[in-house]
Image (cartoon, rainbow, N blue to C red):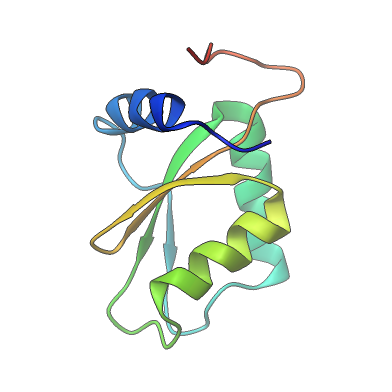
Length: 97
């Protein structure tokens, strides 16, 4: 599923007040982290992931790796923060425009 510009704007406005729930550091993105992010997305649908200064990978590849591993959409990458969205199977809360 690809998000439209309108949907991305809507999700960005919702994400504005969120705090990052994960941090990617020097170990990069591992299977375990992907699993945890996936569980978190199932529970919340919209999350922020922060990339620490000591992360060796660039933020585009970190975002791509997480999105691919969790089947989530990248809403935006701003500074060192990635905003991700994935529709929840059992706990749908966000109704997209």
